[in-house]
Length: 394
Image 1 (tube, rainbow, N blue to C red):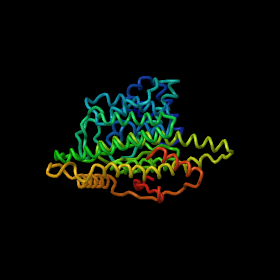
Image 2 (image 1 turned 90 degrees about the vertical axis):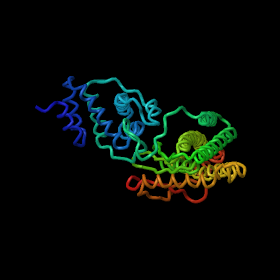
Image 3 (image 1 turned 45 degrees about the vertical axis):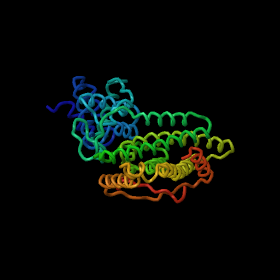
Image 4 (image 1 turned 90 degrees about the horizontal axis):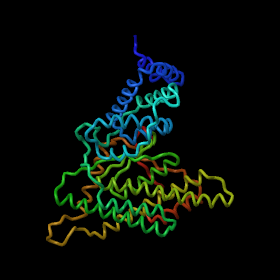
């Protein structure tokens, strides 16, 4: 006789609709002996996700987006259990695991409801598509993209993180402007220092990649903001709108900078948007959605040129060479050009078929004006922005 768990899976996972889930949940609820095997199979689904290029934060983000917070907790429990078996995890995984939501207790509020939620999660995990890997799965040797060594956060990133935290917390726009500008200048200087060190030591360092969530609502504007931050920090971003993330390609110090700055600027922009919107609503207007969309589009576009200008200023101040004549220090501009080419080549290998789309849709003049002003205050424009997206996933 076919095991109960196989009967439940046949009913729930390989068909659409709630009827199959209810049938599978009824079978599992009536057989407590299947509980351990049910969890073990969930770990297998998670392991297959790693083999298809997914990472812990990616899985939880998609589950939360497609199902709900409770399902995200169920996924987190499986992920924590599955990854505990490895002695060493890929870089960035520890931070992702530390950020997982709490796993709910099993078989609550009742066996039937719990089994139905688990089967709904497994149905989603079973259908995860293969995506471009940004590192090896746990337990595998690095292949393709560079695998940086695990290490504590560099002191410069700790300083940058502190500056951005102060910029987010202050209620004074001028102070936030100064703090954010200083953070970008430190990022640009750190990137230059790392590039020159790699050139001096003839390092075999190669670009890597990471994924950053781009969540609804107003995900197009957020993707534009991330693209602007990536470009100003010598990285390339490719947006996958269907799966809710952008893949950022670049050298490791620059990837860290992009993630830090994007997260902070998104917080600062959201706070500024909320304040501006409150003023508009006090004046009697109600077009909240169009105001917010236009605000964030203007904020992202304006920041693109400001960030690029800050990086160019720091690069120019560093000079065309890294030291006095005869010092043996490498010239800066050829070093940066070589790194830019390496990033572009890596991005094109990862995404041989991307589309570049001119984005339209900012229709609210007040929102655009306020968003531009907020970008100026953040200290970080021009023709309509463009986005690089993965073909077939936009």
